[in-house]
Image 1 (cartoon, helix red, strand yellow):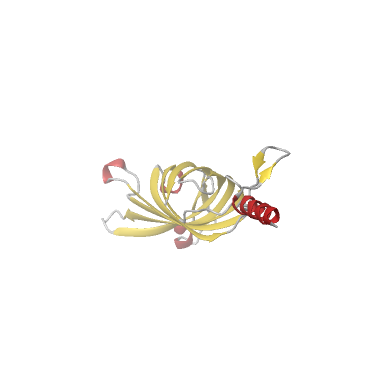
Image 2: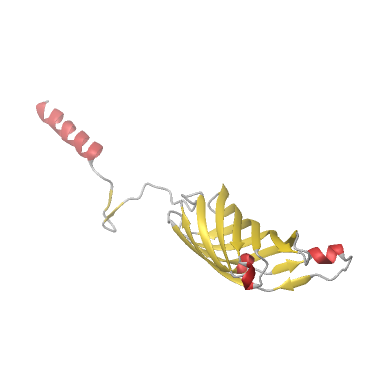
Length: 182
């Protein structure tokens, strides 16, 4: 009886506190399910070219997070001094959809670019451009950093509406974005 008790005690201790081990491959079992959901929901980004013309600082928020599909809202700002001759203020606002393959993502986005120009009389004149994006995004699900490259045309339709002109101008542009997730 004493031997059975000792045997049961040793068996219980070994099975309770031991680790599972795969004797065929010589490594431990992974009991976790791999998830492709992003860990961090916010990011700040610096975009070269793209919807801010030469640059923009952007904030992006994760709105929907699943393994395969992710939806993000994005707002940015770019400011240029009057001496540059560029429209002084650009504010791109986008909704982006990601189709995920672990750390590789296809990104498609649609939005508006609010900009502030001045009339010849010196008054502020706010107008809208359309924005579209399709590109590649590299971001590991648990990483703090991201990299994006995309085709981002700017669609000039505002003056066409005011002039009742049916032609819309498409200004092709590409962009490269570096970001930090938090």
